[in-house]
Image (cartoon, rainbow, N blue to C red):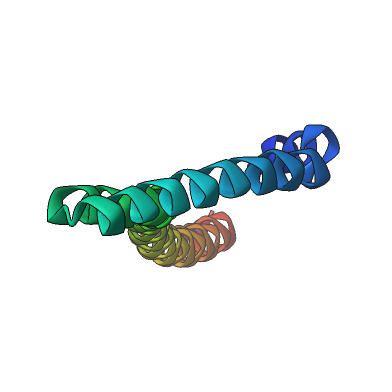
Length: 126
């Protein structure tokens, strides 16, 4: 994720995007004005609606881009939650196995000590 972000920030030129966006906004605004003037001259509600839609088209794209980003972030969040849950489960399983092995080790050490005592007693008896 960080490598992709670094590459994006190195190659992304927001000034170019802003210039293109400004030019498109000017064209859109001009088209909207021409359509509004024609709508007023011809008393056409359809042209007035079209002029309004042309003006709002940029906002529709921005809203879609924001909605797409939100969907992507939500998917990433769900994936991270799944991964965290998996890691937590694995950690707990590992901890339980470690405790079990530690008890087995203590039992074996006690058994070794007991057998060493038995060997010592048997050697003394001989």
